[in-house]
Image (cartoon, rainbow, N blue to C red; front, top):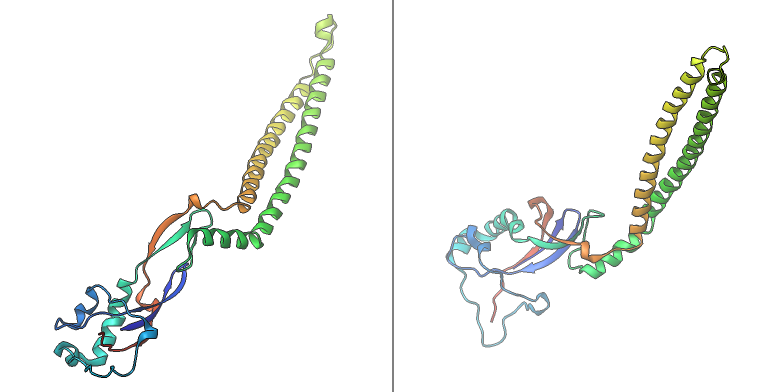
Length: 236
C-alpha cells in the first residue's frame, strides 16, 4: 500500500492511496495490476483474533523494502494519469476533484479581480486614443476641403475666361492633406478594432460558460510524485 502526493502542472496537487496485490511476479511488475481499494482509516496494527498473516511472496522478500521503494519511485507516476477540466479562454485547469460548475465559479471570482482591472485600464486608454484620433481625422478632413476650395478659387479664372495662371501648389497641398487623412483614418480603424476586442474580453470576464470547457488528461512527472508512506497490509 502506498500513500502519495502528486503535483499536476497548472492543476494543483492531489493526495491518494493505492494498494497493489503482492504476487510471485517480479517487483518490476508490481504496479501493472489493478489497484485494490483500501481505506486508510480501516487499517489496524494487529490481526483480529483467530486470523494469522499469510506468508509474503519470495519475490517481495528478495527485493525487500528498498526494492518496493525503487519500483514506486520509478513507476508510480505512470499510473497516476488524471482527467481535468480545461478552460481554453483563460488556459486554466481545474483543481483535482473539482467539477465543471465549481471550476466555473472559481474562475469567475478570480477573473473579476486584477485581470478585469488590467483590461479595463487598457480599454479606457485605447478609448482615449481613439477619441483623439477621431478628432484629428475630423480636423484633417476640414483642412483638405479648405485646401481644395482654395485651389478652386485660385484657378477660377479658367472658368470665367480670365488670364489668371493655374495654381498647382494648392492642388498639391490638397493631395498631401488627403494622404495624411488616409493615414489617420487607418489609425482610427485599427483603434476601433482594438477597443472592440478589449470590450469583448471585459464582457467575457462577467460570464464563464462551462460549455466552452474541455477535458484534458495530465500525468505527473517522477519528480512531482512524493511517497508519503508505504506499508504491507493483509486484507481479510
